Image (cartoon, rainbow, N blue to C red; front, side, top):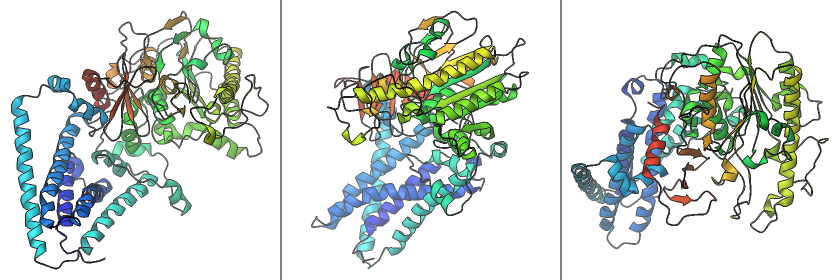
Amino acid sequence: MQAVRNPWLLYFAAINALLTALIALSTVPGDLLFAFTSGTLFLGLALPGHFFLIALILYLPLSIAAKFVQHKRQIVIPAAILYSLLVFIIFVNARLFELYRFHINGMVLNLLASGEAVQILSIPASTWFIVLAGLAVLFVGEYVLAKNLFNYFARINHKPLAIWLTAATIMLGGQGFYAYSDARGDKQVTGMLRFIPWAQPLTAKRALRKIGVAIAASDVSALDGQVYSSLNYPKQRLDCKQPVTAPLNVVILAPDSLRYDMLTAEIMPNAYSLVNQSQLFENHYSGGNATRFGMFSLLYGLPGSYWFPMLGEQRGSALFDILVEQNYQLFIHGSASWSSPEFDRTVFAAISDQIVSGKSLLAANPGVKRHRDTIVTNDFIGKIKNRDRSKPFFGLLFLDAPHNFSKDSNAPSPFQPALRSVNYLSLDNDYDPTEFFNLYKNSIYYNDMLIGQVLDTLKHQQLLHDTILIVTSDHGQEFNDSRQNYWGHNSNFSKYQTKIPLLIYWPDQPAKSFSQRTTSEDIVPTLMQRVLGCTNPISDYSTGQNLFSDAYRSRPLVLESWSRRALLTDDHIAVFEPNGLTLVYDHDYIELTTGVVDSESILEAMKYMGDFLQ
């Protein structure tokens, strides 16, 4: 490492990194902070490491600028301004976290930039004066610190090797600690991640498994012994009493990537045969545009923003707590792995020993040469046939063919012409999607054949009079429908990627169509109230509503993706980018250059996103 003539700027960055880490640390509850667990050790490494990285991002352009100015002292004022803003932003974020339990994001930035938001939040002039005065005092302090550091290091010859090594050690140490703890299922560590603003943790389960590190499965018993939980879920102990009469069975049939307009007599004849006996929700949306968040909202009744807190503490869905309590048999079958995304450590954490995947079935039957959807459906049907008839059952069949545009080799392909395989490099705005779309429809037709086999089993077992059937999905699939070169899912929040079917066959209930906008968050509260006899207010365990309530209200919906979030309202879709930019679209996904996001909708969504955090 070469000697730096005056390393004052590096030390200035390091001091501000420690200061911002202390501000962030103030949001951690005292009983958790002083518990001296692996979680507190992780925070001791990760917080300063995280803020060292942020401080160094500001350091780099200032350091480069210093090489081009005649007098190095000229950098003192710009440095004081930049780091004052950094400290101020971290302070504001800490106060926001204390109020809403999440960090500054695109929704918050849009709200703060709105003149309407100032009125909604009722911020008086005196508060603004205090904020501006505090910022001025902060700048003076930063300027004095920067100036003194510059003068001190100008008089000595100092090589800052130690500070570089320290910063690298704690940054790499924090990431490595988290990766190891995540692989071992240490919830005291993973649960701490939420206190680090905008954290991007390293996970390495596959790499660690290769070198012999044991990867932990869910440890539900450990939940009872936790010192602290960041979750307030459910808010109250659930009071649920099984009906005196014969309890209803529940079966959810969910092909992956099934968009809203696929439930037709031509494409899904078996599922569609139920329409005249069922409740059909014609304006139904997933909780996101990817499997992780779509299935999360379906099975928790919560926005996908709760994924990481639930994963950090391996807290399963309250729905399955009550199903187990009421002695339901559970037939949870998925064609793809339940561990990626980590549904075995979130939704099914309490019942991870009862879930079945196509991967596990293939491992047990290596000679079988059938599509995984066929294999899991056959096993699912076998479980229903061989069930304990003295107990009710809950079944989930999550199929994968439409996601991979595949089908069993002997399944028909009625939609022609169709591609045999997809060359993703050829997809562009001029590509004719007809053959690709037919390939997709053929995979859905194949899945519908399997749904037909399940329906036939239920009929032959004389179960349709006491079984609720739900046909839905995790998200949709786009084929450049909006003519903006979007293909697949997880790329935008248009109706083609987020709007999905919802058909509910409820024994002895008249057929009806519903036109109001509904969400996957509504499934859990509907089942909890109408099937499991839960008398708690829905707000104790879900942000959804009972689909059949006379008081049902279409409300702003939070839609999640891997890197972005959107808010769907009656008028528009607001997309909040990671960089703070907000883009507004109409429901046809045409950008509205003059679009304005309703601040009240943002505040309502923020409330839902913070309701179950503490």
